[in-house]
Image (cartoon, rainbow, N blue to C red; front, side, top):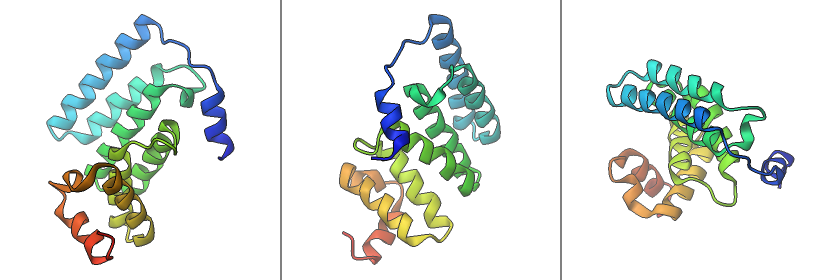
Length: 153
């Protein structure tokens, strides 16, 4: 287990204040609304604003995981795959390598796929498939076909 994961798991989780939680939720909702309206750059702004409310060290908070996943998702839609990977990898570590978030795995695989990093794409997409099955790829036939072409399924 790497030291970042160990440190994240060993820090005792405190509670965010009610005011912090309300701000994070409001900013995140604005970000989600922007995603729905396909205003991905504005969504990133709102999610980043929510992330800025979280106290240091930010990576000890569960909210940082889902906010980073949300920013990575918006980056994916903007075809900004390198930046998406940075945020998604951060979320992956925060959620814990032992219990990864299938959505984060899917988006990581998709970003790597578009960067033509097939080994990483295959690893993350296959992991998402192993956790969620083919339902995970219902709206994503390109990536499902990619896994089939690699004789993974």
